[in-house]
Amino acid sequence: MMQTRQQPDTWLKLTEVARILGVHSSTVRLWSDKGILPTHRTSGGHRRYLKSEIELWQESTRETPELQPASAMQSAIGQVRMQIADGRLEAEPWYQKLDEPARSQYRTSGMTLVRGLMTYMFGGESEAASEAYALGYEYASRARRCGLKAVDATRAFLFFRNILLEAMINAYDGAHVPPGLAWGKMLTKMHNFTDLILVNLLQTYQTLEEARL
Image (cartoon, rainbow, N blue to C red):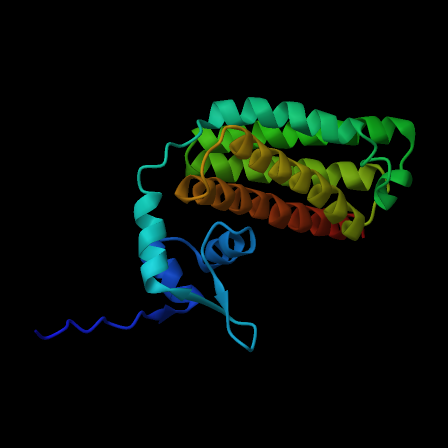
């Protein structure tokens, strides 16, 4: 009796996996770093993926229930407030340069970012662009009023962006959403939105500086 010869598995590059899953390469890199995707490393440190593992992962996550944005936001709001109150904000070098009125303004920034993200989650692309512009302008103008340089304005935004990202990940984890496409969609949307804010922040800061000269 002739034995069937098993076909060798195929190794895929990161860009090939992104094309198969229909996501951006940066999303695949993020999923890999967080252990969401099964990943292997070459001797040179490059990421490689077995096609059979990616197909199995894709099939197993196809029916994964998604956490509703409103539910995730409610959980994130509470966690952001806790993160702001636990002393992490006071330890930031840029925050230590501020007087008390300015510190009070910045303590509201996390909540503003959460509300902006909620608008983006429920709205369309036009609403996202408008919200990102408004938030970028707010962070830039506040930084200048408080005497912060552009680099410190960026650090301030990244601080709040990172605790919001951390809060959203904890919300998905707490809701027992299995790692998969639901996580990927959330992370991709968050990064796209906050990247827009950061670009608008830097552009606004530069425009305001040029107008002063």
